[in-house]
Length: 137
Image 1 (cartoon, rainbow, N blue to C red):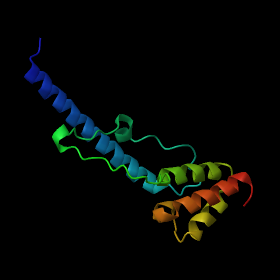
Image 2: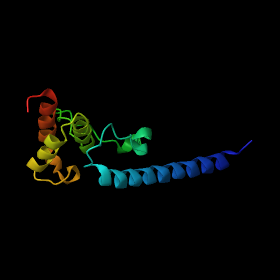
Image 3: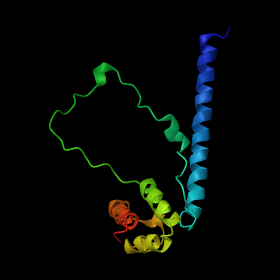
Image 4: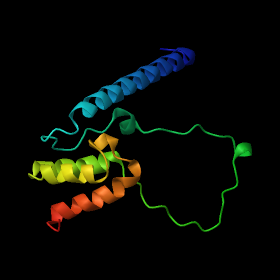
């Protein structure tokens, strides 16, 4: 039977391996999708990055260091639109034969390719793209 110190070292080593593998998978994904994101055949959803599969946890704090939560009423922020959200919708439209309209939308926000779009314009871009899918544009 393994002692506790050896088990802890083994767990730590495996955690380091998992972190390294997640970082390598993310780097590979970023490099690959940067090369193909504007391809007319960009159909389907991107795979979920390994780092998001396992989630992240914040370090635990001792009760003495906890902050008092702010109890003032605050409006819930609208969910942020991500590049992955926009890419998924545009890929679906492209697969339906709307590649030219997708390209027009990207150019309309002042970019040559999707990765160059200002994140502040993702919401507008997503709304316009949904209009194409509905047949209203």
